[in-house]
Length: 114
Length: 113
Image (cartoon, rainbow over all chains, first blue to last red; front, side, top):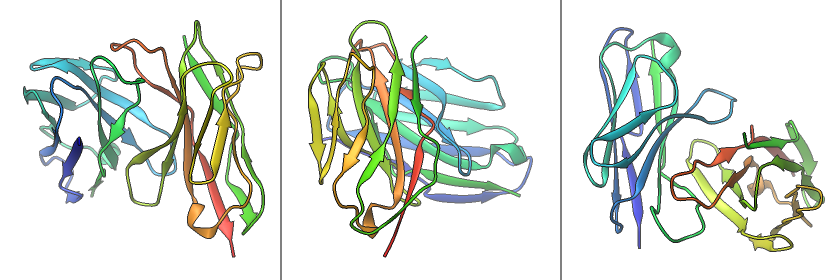
């Protein structure tokens, strides 16, 4: 069966510090991968998605970046965090072909920028 | 473009009450429809889905029927429990591997004992 893991689960960082959130998927090959952000009490905002190694599409211009160094690894990064980067970050995967199109989400990473 | 509209919350119910969370959508063609649930501090879990008109998705006592004539996918449960307290998201996709899921804004459900 397929599983998805994110870490760290919680992170408290000062303004201006770097960020690295990691997501890995097991049990499937060549998935589509996604990073979403959820601000407190708000809906889901799609940040990045990837259809393959090294292929990243950005939905929202900001000081965050994403990379996909391996087929089942997706990393969210920032060189200098802003207060507005605080939120709950969710990684998700989806089958490239077959299935019924649903996303499968990780447990989430809660980032607090102080 | 595609869009999903959910009733704004929070929805507050007493235990064993009947639940309806409305969801309507705007999309071309024949999208697949989903309900996700997010418990406090956790990621989203797929609750149920329907892939074609008149399909009924069901899971854990929740049901939703794909109504193409009214472009709706309302979530229902006959008797809610305190443990159902969560945020519920309606979503759709166009069944193309490259297409995104379009999410509604989420509806918070609070069930009181």
